[in-house]
Length: 456
Image (tube, rainbow, N blue to C red; front, side, top):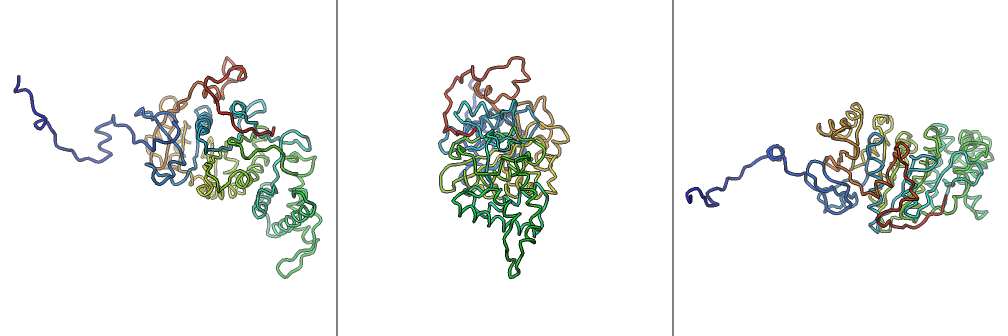
């Protein structure tokens, strides 16, 4: 019997040298490499069962295990597979950190309210609701592109972008006339101790004063002719009889609290087609940059844009947001673009949109049709297993499961929600047989009450 026993030195095996790729095949039970343990739990890595923890600000730190080049994220996939649930639970979990702040452009919803409405109400936040065709009525709120919180040089960039959305590319003469009108409108407003508005710019375009182009004098008649395309576009924004009136002409509505930890812009009453949505995006990007972001504080901010194709598919808007995204690291900003289809964007015709997508270091991908999955995998450089997984919406990428590409690491992640989060993030209530009254069901865990915004 003793002869069958062996000492440890007699049973020791020599070390085996292998590559990482071969080792994964030899030992398939080995779990995926983890990232930094700090941050919020998203769920679990599907194949290893390990907790999947993510925070773009922590991963941007050079000392992090996985070093990200930026804090920006791209979320893609078909409806009903978990994009909205991911964003909402991520925000709710991140808000428990004191130095986190969020702004959401909510473009999805039903019955005139956005998808974030129930979460905002639970947290004591009133969404900022913009209304199309409100005219001079008190319904909705107004955002002034010439708000003094936006520096004058950026005000002019916003004006040019808005005019290009409405009329196409502006000629050099029209830009000159618009610049002169902007200066004249600002001066008039200062003399009257008030804030300049778009109506002031329209008045200055249609009744200009003499100007000089270098040493060449420019008569008012010439300026009026040069500025006519911009004047016609501004009439659509300022004339009470036009559908776009009331959204941008006049001082910014009172009660918009840019100091709140969660700001929700409810855009569900704006048409998805037409100029209203891209116009708002052109205004809100610089407006948030200078009114919401304060570079000298320690707050880490995240801007989540749903239906982000309104930004990426319009070059004037993409130019403004590209500047915001490019300097995100200096501003402490994480930009999340949420889309359904990458293939719908003509990226070769919009270099600014392509630049924004390339600046995203995190990509979260949910189920897509096979052709869309192939297009997306080619553009993002996904491995073959991820390419096949994206097209399998019944098994691998079933609802709640997504491919996470964080830097160079690609994982299949199962998103896990609590019972309260499931209720707050449910977007299928109208299709279910039993409709639950949100007001009648109280959270089973305490919710953080945030600073209120009073705009309606």
